[in-house]
Structures are given as C-alpha cells and as structure tokens.
Amino acid sequence: MTTTGLLSIEVEDITGQKRRRASGIATDATIAEMTDSLAWSLGLPEQDASGRPVVYSVRTTEGEALNPTDLVGDVLKPDDRITLSPSATAG
Image (cartoon, rainbow, N blue to C red):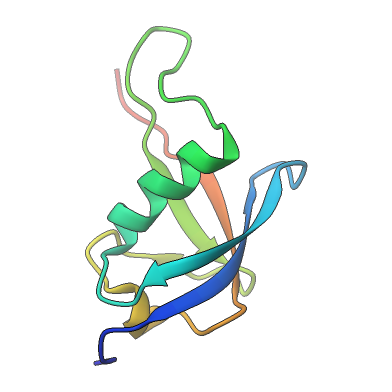
C-alpha cells in the first residue's frame, strides 16, 4: 500500500476529445472519489437523457478496469493516463 501523497495523471473521456492533466490527487482517495471529481472537471454529464445519475468507470491505457474501492496510490502511478466512460445502468 502506498503512503499518503499526491500524484498527477492524464485523464480523458471515452471519445478522447476532452482531456486534461489532473494534479494533486490524493493517493489515499478511492478510485470512486477521484472519478467523481475528474468527471466534474471534464464537464461530463451528471445525468443521462432520462434524468438518472451517470456513473463513470475508469480504465487504464492498457485496458484494465479499476475497481471503485481501490486506493489511487495502489493502482495508479504518476503520469498514468486513464479514460472515464459512462457505465451502463439497467433501467
């Protein structure tokens, strides 16, 4: 497990059109906590067309899906690139 610290990563949406460098991410934050913040900073929709909340999943450039409960410092390294994509929800 990684000690508490901060790291910077590259983040993009599923289309690759929205992209930014995210700095100051706490290594002891969960992937879910980080994802909520990053989705907001990219200006991604918070609700779908039916008004349901959108939940985003995270994948690394290698295609690995990250678990929302994992700690950032356990699964990401400085300068990693991740992709946020909306998770399908059953309705």
